[in-house]
Image 1: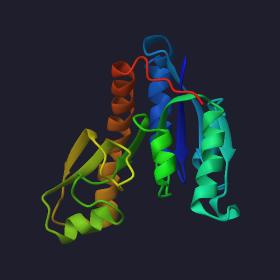
Image 2: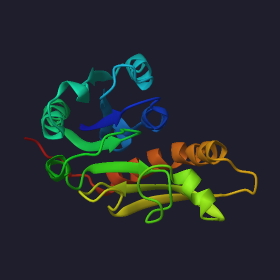
Image 3: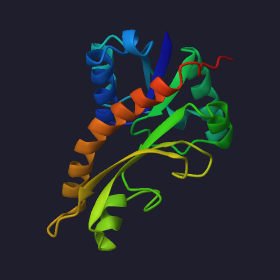
Amino acid sequence: MRNIVILISGSGSNMAAIVRAAEQGRWAERLNARVAAVLSNRADAQGLPLAQEHGLATAVLDHKAFASREDFDAALMAEIDRHAPALVVLAGFMRILTPGFVTHYAGRLLNIHPSLLPAFPGLHTHQRAIDAGCRFAGATVHQVTADLDHGAILAQAVVPVLADDTADVLAARVLSQEHQMYPQAVAAWLAQSPMRVKRG
């Protein structure tokens, strides 16, 4: 069985969408895969109780308790590797990861970003799209590399930017598409990568 580990920092709505898709789509039988654990850098992340309700292992590593970003990432890697992951999925994990972390999970680390990359990497994507006069916005699932929001694009969803949109209204419209696209992209990665299991 190939394990998926999901990292969150907040509400975990994309995590929840993936967990539901895995259960309803019978990923265990169809893709030989399952969501094994949900980890967070925040003890108050709202997604943790939901993960526990689904019987998933959870753990919290507070990044503030570590002297450096490298120390935190090393501890996070050790916790992730306890589950021998075939895939690590970032779902609203609000930490910039070190190159060592990214290298350790190279080829099996996915992220979702709330813009149509390569446009608007980084933060405040919805307001930036509105300010730039974009007619369309969206979200991107991509491989994670050491360069922030620059990995290979696996899937994108497009939504219109309406004349009266605020950043919050546009964000909600994009998020509804993220919940559909991210589980599909994870399933597609699993379907195309039957032997991608790395241990140690």
